[in-house]
Figure 1 (cartoon, rainbow, N blue to C red):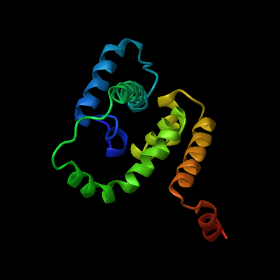
Figure 2 (figure 1 turned 180 degrees about the vertical axis):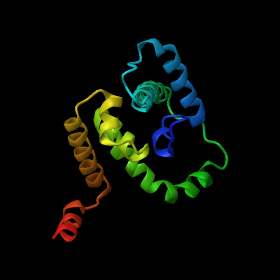
Figure 3 (figure 1 turned 90 degrees about the vertical axis):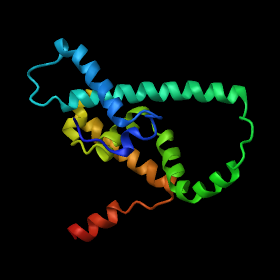
Figure 4 (figure 1 turned 180 degrees about the horizontal axis):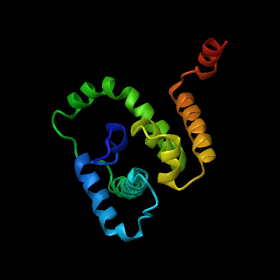
Length: 167
């Protein structure tokens, strides 16, 4: 099974565990096995492409669900809700900022960043998984990193690190 991270599946997997999501990925891969290019030495990028499509579908489902919930209005107050919220605010502050920053990214930029940072794929593997040129992977990662840094209020330290490292 490809190595996974919480970053990839946590927000999009809902109550279903990551193993279930990977199970879906392998089920789809099994069904599409006749279309697999056997010239490819490594099937991981193909599997990550399928997984990325599943994530995108889950994201679309969540948007539909959110719109429905908004149309229905807020749920009735539950006893103890205020205490639970107060306990989670501090721990979730950075996570909410990051989620917001990621949500603002274009789908392609978010998918590329998730495969790179969350799954540890190389640029070449991401290009194969998303069926895009290598230069597009580089530009998407650069743009996504910059936008996330800006949203989190963090300066771009890449240039400073490169100057100090490379003189």
